[in-house]
Image (cartoon, rainbow, N blue to C red; front, side, top):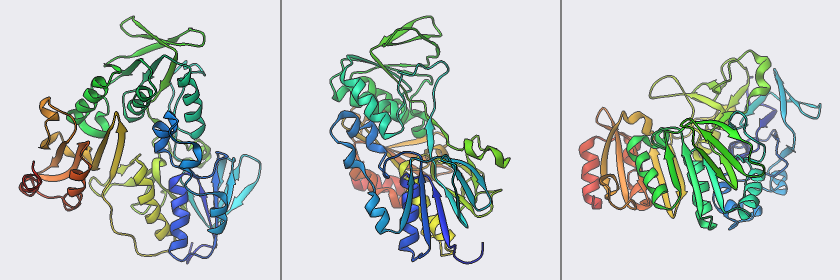
Amino acid sequence: MTGQPEHVLIVGAGLGGLRTAEHLRSAGYQGRISLVGDEPHAPYDRPPLSKQVLTGDWEPDRIVLSTLDALDDLGVRAHLGLRAVGIAPGEIALSDGASLHADAIVIATGMEARTLPGQPPHVHTLRTLDDSLALRERLRRSRSLLIVGGGFIGAEVASAAVTLGIPDITVLEAMQVPAARALGTELGTLAARLLSESGPKLRTGVTITRFLDAGERVAVELADGTTVEADAGVVGIGGTPRLDWLDGTGLDVTRGLICSPSGRVQGLDGVWALGDVALWEDPHTGGPHRCEHWTNAGDQAVVVARDILDAAPPQTTVPYFWSDQFGLKIQLIGRAELGEGEILPLHGEGLKGGQIRGTVAAYFANDRLVAVGGFGAARLIARYRPLVADGADRATVLATAAKLGG
């Protein structure tokens, strides 16, 4: 492709796909834009699905990111309720038998919830608006809840269940520490404390051997021979990239699409990918890296839009994610997995067994700051963003903590 494309086709009508279209227009692109989404809904925000929507505090219209009229005003033609089922150079085949042609294609199809072998159909997962509404209705009729997976989705569902007044909540986690991949062991242990001290029963290091026949209820057998039963069940064990429709390309898409630092897919000319399905070249390690957080999709959309238009790339952003649980906001700025286990408390007493709220910790690699995480400490966390961006040394971080009252 030379020069600006006449038609950009975006597959995936979530945050990443929508933001790509918006950034194309804000950068001055005047050509055609098409947006394909397999859900019938207009683009919506996913984080509230396990929070405000699940508790009933918000109805679906509250999470709409762009109405169909707004897409039309933006000059975006929406093809909703249709799946991409195949790809050829400059062409996407759709589930209704039609094909769309374009000279630039963006793949932003996101993840689908992972399930367990033998998982009964009435055991819920939580990825889409319809998932959230179905689970909300089930929780309204339940007095007990079994959650498989103690990561952010599982903990947020548990938090919502506490808000709804469900008295008996059990969370099963295969790892010894929940959320360890996102937060590391130390802050993951703090997340476990927050969950357990808020009412739900957390069992770690457990393995489910099978689902039992329990009628409309949910029952599982564990490796130690014990069983757990509840009125309702949710499996929140992550997701897999929605890329099965690319099987004919010969690419290994098991972990995602391998991309350049600007999102260009290796092995597919004129194709970009972003968000949960994309493995972008990691500037820290040189290898492929996928970031599955909400803010990443929006950040990468800017990069992709500008690369499609052959415009200068935007300023590099600092990764960020959050999770609202049990009245606290858990936040992390940077890349905790680069910290190599070097964790330094900065504020609060949570890592010493004290109050969780107000706890902030720094992650270091080779004496350079790579991330800062906190529990209920939004004001403090924000002050460390420039230090993470600069890779500040330990002395600078400690001086900042002392100035802030660490």
